[in-house]
Each structure stands twice: as C-alpha cells, then as structure tokens.
Length: 315
Image (cartoon, rainbow, N blue to C red; front, top):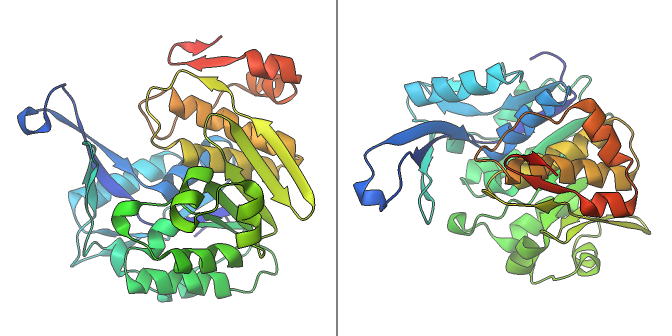
C-alpha cells in the first residue's frame, strides 16, 4: 500500500438500482453500481486531491472485481483489499426499504488481523464507521484493534453511520465513538441510538473525542472541540436523493482539516461536498471548480445563505 494521508476501512458492496419506475416486483431493468460508506469517503477524498486508500475484503466474484475496479478508477489505493476465495461480495438493492444481502460476506469475515497488515507510515487519519462494528464479532474486534493502535502520527475518525437494520449495540457504538479523535454524527442518529438531542448532550455523552461534528440536517452542523463551539448553517439544496451525503460531508470536512482550515471553514467544506451529492443520484460526484469553492468558502453569511444547489447547477 502506497503512502496515504487517509486510510478508510470498511465494507463496500454491489448495488442494484431500479432503472425504470413502478413496483419493484415488476421492474425488469436494473442498474448495477457500488456502495459503501468508507469507500465513498475515500473516493471523494481522492477527487479532492487527498491521497487515500481503502482497506476491505471482497469475494472472488464479478461483483468484487467491479467494486475494486470502480474504487481504483476513482484514484484510491486498493492494494489493501483482500480477495476472499470462499465468501461472496455483499450486495444491496435500492428499494423502499433498502434490502441488504451481506450476511456471510467476505468483508464480514474481516478481523483484527487486518490491522497487522496496515502500513500507516505517513497516514494522518484512519477513517472508520459504526457500520463495520455491526457486521460480525470479528469486525467489531477489528474496530477495537484500530482504536488500540498507538497514535503517534495519525488520528482516528469515526462516523456513527447508524443503520437500524444492522442492530448495532448502542453501548458498543458509544465506546467506539468515545475512543476516536474525530466523531461525525447526525443529530437524528444520536437521538435514535443514545437519546441525546443536542450538540451539548452529545458532547456530555462522548467526553473522549478531541472533535465532535454534529450534522443537523438542513439546519447546519456544529463542531465542538474543547470549549470551542462553531455552528455553520447548511446550504439550501433542492434534494434529489440523500444517500451518500453524509459520506461526502465527512470527506469535505476531513480534507479541509488536512489542509489546515479553521473549524468554520472546514464545516463549510463539508456542506459544499454534501450539497453536490444531495442534488445528484450518485454517492460520489465530481468536485466543484476551485474558484467556485474558494468564493463560497470565503463568502459572507448573507451570500452563503442566498446560494441554492440544484440538479442543474448553483443559483
């Protein structure tokens, strides 16, 4: 694995999306793509110019090869991905509700031995999520091993990424989050998992992390670091599809942190990336041009509040 500033660790799957309207049982045309919170973050970081790597396991099957090829083509180092000869690549179907077929997948068989293969020389952030903790006892042990690593030169970023269907234990998720350096959590997730409803309550529940970012939907996001608290309102967006927006926010925020931006500017960077995904059907989108990003990051509060993102562009 080449030197990566950010190493993202977790499962990605083949995704099937209906290619025509109507009840699912009558759909005959499907589009195959890929999906995975951690690989979404890695791909978005790569498109933002951040050297990123994705570490996972896939099956020795066409779906696994498609997943790895897609992530690699996005500019992400995939040399840390193991091909499992006996277990399949997981998949899910974008229906309502989403249906997952990931039990017994190659990624669910990952364990703490994955950490032994990691070369974190030069790595500044290891990014994981609560999804992995719920896949299997081995995956939970893997996340705990990540938290046990000496942090002489890197930080651990943990995105709660609550998935009710996976049934992760709230106490386990709290323990993992509290051991991270950076925590990203939706206010709605925190309420569902821990019963905490405000940024202050979330900080009281998680005293350990250096930085907590609470994503408050279309209201905005609050960053808490020590006694410092910053709120940045969200951009107005004509939402096409919400899937992947949290991963995009995480990537934009982490990239800005690596560039040394102050908290308010890093939150704006997260909002910008989330907005481009919210008005798209894709989990990973092309970044905005440099001048547009610079203008919005430096905009005064009135200008920031007046901008609207749409599928057709910014107005």
